[in-house]
Image 1 (cartoon, helix red, strand yellow):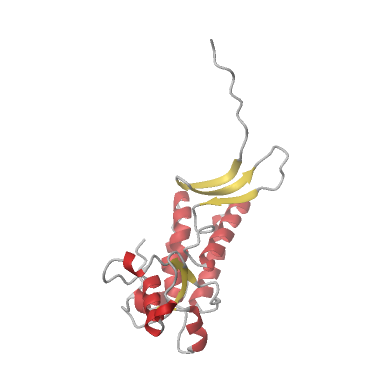
Image 2 (cartoon, helix red, strand yellow):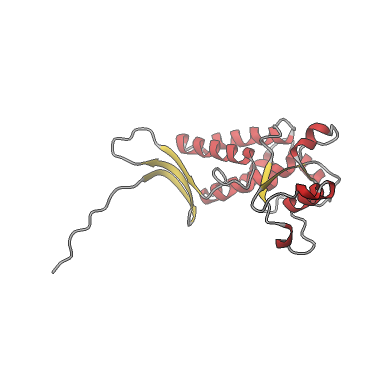
Length: 217
């Protein structure tokens, strides 16, 4: 005998959408036939992940909205260039540039590890051993300017340092080349777009070379 018919229930339809990898996708979701306005739905990408910084999340989400609504890559490019200029000129807020990484506990890192969360935890414990972050707690930090060739772990500071030390400046080149553009590239490269070329085309992008941050995508 034939099995009983299987009824499939509509969950969501995405139009348009970008499928990055398994469990990493984003699109405009429709959940019913009479739904007029779509829902921006993202899974596993920087707009919903907690290990980046707000600037990356905001720029990526606005770029995707612009792409989905207009289907015009040139409009996305214009917006991204404006935001990159803002970061490079030091016009971004401390809040938007604060990164928060999970602290795994001192004994769970390899000997000699210099990841930012551990570096800052060590600094905190050097002042007060009781100030060690809890395992699983997210340690906030910013990346500041330094001499050419300075290792990243020497450029990380607690966000409050930027307020108390007037000699520190946010490292816009790092945020652009190591955080914003890689996140965008993972999406836009699927459309054949090179977002790193957008940076090279910017009139003042030459300043990035002074910080020895290579566009090594």
